[in-house]
Length: 148
Image (tube, rainbow, N blue to C red):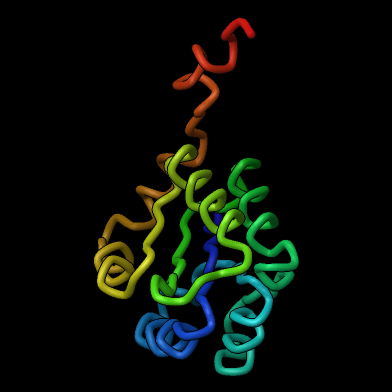
């Protein structure tokens, strides 16, 4: 089964994301890529041969689209180059997306060095597949069944 990978980059990190993807272009040719709006368009222009689906822009719901894919187990890894120095108007959405990735054991890299570590692992695809059916509902069952 083909892995689905999320790619997101805040404005000041989009060029870095594109340069990083160029380094790993051959590996990403094996995956289906989902990217938030502007990031997706930048990557589609630079890498027309890659299978890149541009979702909505982050502030217009792209982060939630990726979050929904995580919750429905349709996204197996995410590379999200965040900009810690620029306030984001949709910061709540960004935090929710990262929270879902953590809950569902979706590997996520938020900077280039971590992204390099993740993608260079020879077992990257196997590890992503291993957690495809991870069930936070079981792990957090006490939360789901609590009395309110």
